Image (cartoon, rainbow, N blue to C red; front, side, top):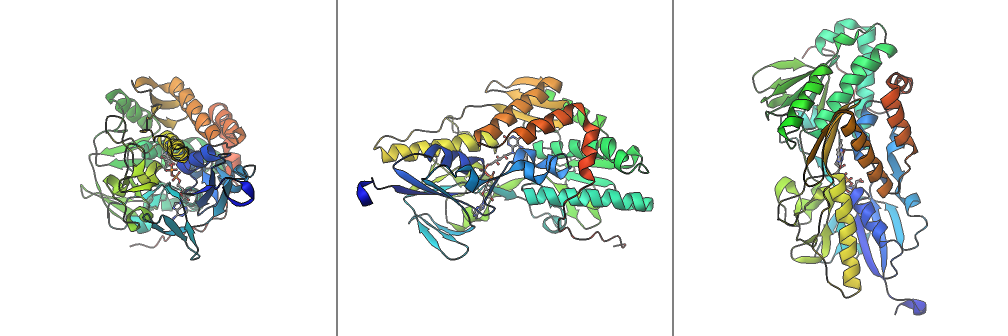
Length: 436
Ligand SMILES: Cc1cc2nc3c(=O)[nH]c(=O)nc-3n(C[C@H](O)[C@H](O)[C@H](O)COP(=O)(O)OP(=O)(O)OC[C@H]3O[C@@H](n4cnc5c(N)ncnc54)[C@H](O)[C@@H]3O)c2cc1C
């Protein structure tokens, strides 16, 4: 028994307030045997699947971030803190915050997510614009709006790449952002800057692989490629990016494409904290975990979400998806509760919701459920909306902005242009138009 006759509580530290961390804390909320410290460097849950809507000014940053302290305010056993974890000692286990404070724990759930992987492409880290966080999305939006403004004022800059947007990667992130930028350029921007004709902007997707949406079926590859081309997107498949510079991208075939905006959707890796902690790292620098989601050799440490390599029942690694992260965070909490009750931990079982990607207005592909039932077009777009509304609702987030966006996006796309006129002030390096 603890003080004043209350049962002693185990201290669970959750690092990261993304899908995985929030799901874990939610499951432990109200659990009398545990108190939880939920740490996130931003203090907010950021809903990554809607990042590209922020990047293309369809949603405001406020619409897709949710204050973690407010989210857990009514749960006495959860303390959500805005804090950066600078070091993690899995043996103790304990975390050290950026301000030097150390928090000892009975269990640590590492749910710190991923960062872009530039695969050592020269210039990419410096000049490419990744899309993995809200600040990334705001930088892309600010750069896009600035480029359209400059091109409208000085159309001669178009030949220098002002309206050529290169997207690296033809996975879901690359496809979704390419479709959204193409619709922004062709359907919305001509209303904002009538002097720019729709045909003058170019969106190019580059990937060294030979298929768009490689993880999907062959039908989905063809459908996505067709839909992107229909939106004026140029596909350069089977082509690597050799270098990214401030004013161009150099491709493996020797071509140099003038551009002032290269968006990086080329891959991700676990956050550096994973490697710095000395935990076993596998593919993508992610932490390898056992079937119960704990880290081999460290029974009081769990790793979940994009920071971890999570095996399915058959041992195959699960993809980096919001639904995997959400379910794994919840499951890790279940195993912590099992420990507290003296019960047995259970091996993680993923309920496969399938995979999906939106290509633009009314176009999406969805492979639903473990059997990968194939959908495309409006039906897939509707499925996409349903699954994302569910993901949002599971985090306890407010659905109003998402539903309003969905309605406007589907029925009245030109209304979006109103928002574009009020870009947020984001610090993006000024465009250098001087010749290299
Ligand atoms: C553009 C984009 C679109 C996507 N679309 C979809 C989609 O449509 N459907 C889908 O299922 N999945 C999608 N995903 C994937 C999905 O968003 C991720 O799989 C999911 O966010 C992983 O959740 P997580 O909790 O592991 O990590 P994250 O959501 O990345 O959360 C990690 C948290 O940890 C915090 N953190 C990191 N380091 C520290 C530290 N040292 N100290 C304190 N806090 C720290 C971060 O601030 C962050 O809040 C998309 C991803 C991207 C980038």
